[in-house]
Amino acid sequence: MMYEGEWTVEPAAWHVEGTRMTVTPRAESDAWRHTSYGFVHDDAHALLAPLAVGEAIEVSFVLDYAEQFDQAGLMIRADEETWIKAGVEVSDGVAQVGAVVTLGKSDWSVAPVPEWVGREVTARASRAGDAVTIRARVDAEPWRLVRVAPFPEGAAAGAGPFCCSPTHGDLTVTFTGVSRGAADASLH
Image (cartoon, rainbow, N blue to C red; front, side, top):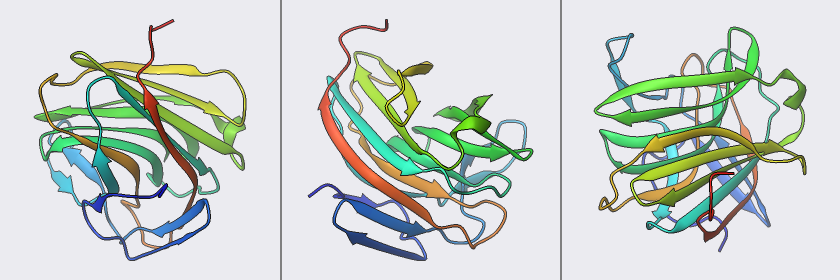
């Protein structure tokens, strides 16, 4: 089954039909730890199945949301203090591809991608050694390197689609696919 695993937090609603999964996050859901904002949120919705070192996951979704901080993509999670979320988040009115890497505290990196709105986005995380390489693309365009981030090599972790809606509760995300395979052989 394409959409397998266990929810970190059950969303307000979700439904699978064929290769599509629609998810409605709970209001004010998010994933963040401490840095700059001073708060901890650990109630984002991620459907996680095991992801070992040497494996990769791709999550595709439709970028059809526009509210502040709404986000969708993929998450890799070992525990509440060790996780990565990557995909597209709306920030200051603009769709931004990026990642949050959390190793005790969260950091955040983004780049504007307004031309991706209304299209299918795929986020890819490749776990190799003590790192995760994050790539993203829209439609069938070439992959764009988003981030190379540290991640504990020996940690058991799960990965899968995620979404959240930090500022309201009327977001619905349409995921169009999840696939798994071998980790990327190189960074370039």
